[in-house]
Image (cartoon, each protein chain N blue to C red):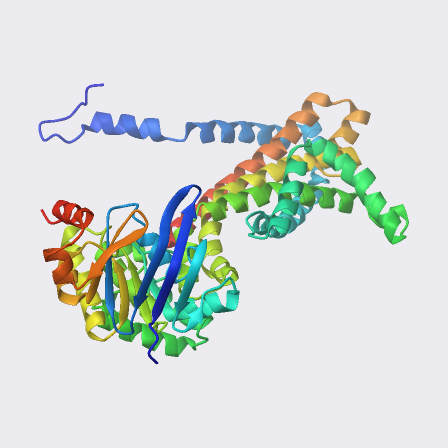
Length: 245
Length: 266
């Protein structure tokens, strides 16, 4: 299958009169790690949220894993089952234990048994390095641990694509690395990833492509070394000079 | 205020004991003393005793009407509240219409309207005699219809107190809106609204006195009937007051204990 994993064509999105996305075109291939950078309000999170239909585009076409995202609820759920999402504020379910967080959607969406989902859950907690926290509640965990649980929760659905919406922005500095390490492992395993983040370490070590967004448009994109070392556009240069002190 | 302390910087014994005095729930002590004083009078004074026994005959009605109305209001309020936050505009507007309607009319008026206008109208439409539904049942129907609307607003606030991120997290895992509501939003919302629901239970217990206007023999009605022959206004209404005060106090202490337990477990 030669078609891209994610195909975005002429997608626009308005919030009232504010144009959040302006005719965006983008495609992501299977196994590719795409990083989206840009100033706040540039539309990067909105674009990411369009991919699993948390935001509904006002115009344009989105095809994810061969499924056209129209307003058909069945299509939307089919796409969401294949697309994992990690949020800035983790969004773990606070009334459930760590293991229950990871098992809930497995049981309700994938219809897995309790024992099967728990086995998968424990294996994933092992993978993200916190098997001993299975029976704690999210509030008892550090931010870094919570975000790793959130990643494990998404992975339990065996998604083909993982979306990361500023996964380290809400973390204390000393916890950023543990989350990035998990993301690096995922990238090495060949996961298709779209990451909204300004973590330069991750960009250098894992990203195949970096897209710079401003005012709802993708201004330029290319391999990380090109974008970071030789950006062509003035706005990209200005932005990078601000974040790469 | 200057902080009294010894050389080590720890608060002095005197300050600590004063804080303990300030923290003590004096209000509870005062109310308990009033209740105790009244109980003693009831025990030693035969007149008080006989009035107490009379009012007591309405206690089962008061408690059962409150309990039954509360259970059904919870169910009705949950359904209305879910309708209130529904994405379906028809459902949502129906729910809002109902809630605003009920909230815009005094409880006493609604009790009359439901018991003497709405219920007879429905009964007639079905083709039953007007006596098919007792006044006690009408009173319960009225309280459920009224409190359902109040509880719906609490349910709505509880659901809205859970940030949109939780719904997004559930949806992005492939769960439907209904599943996310059931397994993620509602369990958290219920915990948040427990205090408000408890307050409504107490309010419902107090408002159950209003159904005395229908002639339902709960404690208020029994007291009114009693004074109409004994003319012992003072004793009767003080004892009636004592009944409500003891019940609401007991209920609020039980509710506080439950909330404490839920919080500790959470």
